Image (cartoon, rainbow, N blue to C red; front, side, top):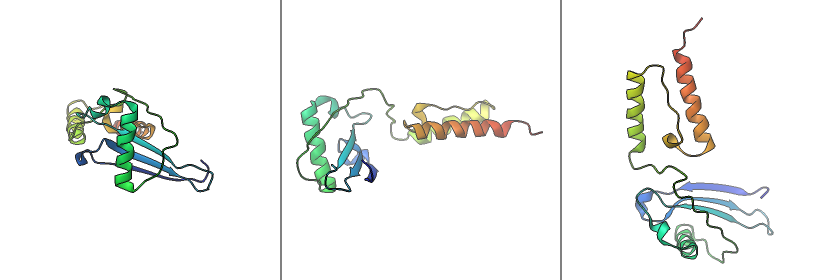
Length: 144
């Protein structure tokens, strides 16, 4: 959608919703649809697996209406279930990861780790973590 307005909102698990992230591309012209992408489910919550696609869409549409006031018909939808495709981090993941990485740096100098399960699943998270690992190793190299 050329010229669309885009928003992406992460939602806290603690609110009890199925929705965990909402992305919206708003139409800027009368012929363009508003496209909404909703991610649902998280570690320890299997409610999404208990619903068929129609039920899941109904629940998520209701949550979207409650949170943002979106109303009106859904013209088209698609459910893409990605069980176990993405790592699901438990609460406290970042602090545990920080302690583990600090322990590795202390006890295994010259070793850096980068993984999909560390700081996010997107390409930008991979690049960020890989770059940080490479920079940490480069800092340890002797300078001419």
